Image (cartoon, rainbow, N blue to C red; front, side):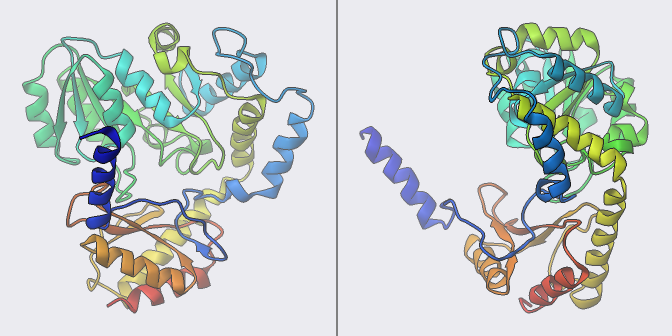
Length: 375
């Protein structure tokens, strides 16, 4: 079988099981799909701050990797700003959360070590683990007993890779218990804060900062393309780990650095959030409203993992069925997309609903009414 035949066969299989992916545009629909939880991606005030400062840089790009021509005083001062927000000794900016996870997991754990990761961890965590020479094991989602058994059987330095909030169900990891377990067995936590960055904690410092556990986590990865409404990411860690990543993390060493505009976006987005922390309270209110209306109008007639995160999942098994449900909501004016297998397990296909500060009470009520019509 030649290359084209093989690729055609794989694509046809996706079409047959209704899991074929295509790019689409959202037109005149109410946003219930983006990760722009705090509305910063559409904030004209933030855009003005970023663009007005960018005009003074006289640079369109960084011109190279950080180790060559791409470093700048602006980048270093922004990293110092992030250290204060994330209560860390050091921080290192990356082009995306994906590349940051690849960097950390492919370079810090070594041959003879063991990485134990939550089975529902993001693809970037799993891909970073695949690049590592360490042994890898998964544990059942948020199951501390299963994790403990895996730790007991592990070898070398043990790393526990988890997310503060998971992107499909919106549920949080039991971080306090994870810290206790890691200390009991002298293991190290690698925490992906993608879906808590900006959303919780003072100045958007995430789950570890909110719980006062930042010193008990070896490495934290923060992503800025979600609640912060911009792009990029950073690793928060001790200075010795920062120096290690600069020397050994290939996704950092061999990547062109972020542009001055991107760095200014990071700095200004966090400065803006510090002055508008009411946005965090606003999104909490919208989540409470969604949960209240769902309970009152739908109850247990539609299955969902109830949570207090802006990510709300409605389980509708079957790729055909969940696509039809999403189409119904879209025709009603709401941008909600289906999550298909194999992205999630067969039988756990779902509508993934994201709530935002800019969704009005009427928007949320209308969405609940449309969901009720699926019953």
